[in-house]
Length: 327
Image 1 (cartoon, rainbow, N blue to C red):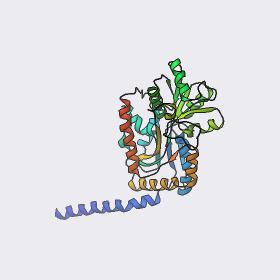
Image 2 (cartoon, one colour):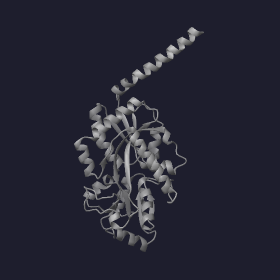
Image 3 (cartoon, one colour):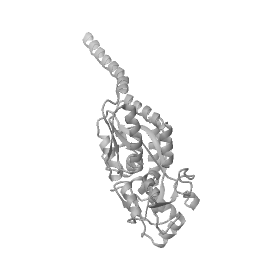
Image 4 (cartoon, helix red, strand yellow):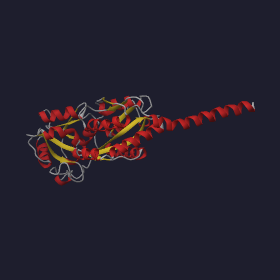
């Protein structure tokens, strides 16, 4: 019996040692096949723009293709759920953002996934939100917009990337801060909402600079204000909300990479190292700045802390702001 127990312990110890030794090998070999990167919003949104920019660099670094898949809908939860239930091998990435990994955890009690279903890899960047309207819209600044909204309660409409998403949350925050009533119109992603703002189907939208960059260059949109503390270097003529008298509206979104929870730590570390390396490139920094984005980077732990802090902040805000999480 003693010999049998010793034998079993030896087998267990050998398996444990082999598992530990295999971790660096997994890291060194990864990836050996194409990697899927799930974007939980439509093509053309800031998440999509950033993913396509970075995937080109990753593909060159790894010698493997990065397949971008846009899985829009339900405030980012459709794409997030897909990744939560994917094989935990590092070959399915999620573009994580407040909608899919912070706001929805606060609002949606019937989600098909939970925060425990993910391991967070790296915070890629952040961006303030810009309030944009079509070029010929009656208001040309935030004060004029507020006056127009108060004179016509419920007449103005604000689009979003989906119910319970970042742009929806920003609209409700603005309604509260400015004491106005702008009706929410949800879309399956920021791109179709932005297109309807430009065509005059809806009045306005809060979204990132990257999501509206092309339409701004084409003079189909104008920006009334930005939610950052100071003006953006890429848009020096756009005043902040604070400059225009809206003092309780200082919001920004972040975006990063997450994987299924049981992904080997060696793979998580490899992903984190490679993403951080790419983010330090001067060309990436210049492109981010031109799009009104800020490069972040850092450790998996730092990214997890960012998400946890946002969940805590949003939980407090939800108690005072009525948000409908249903798509």
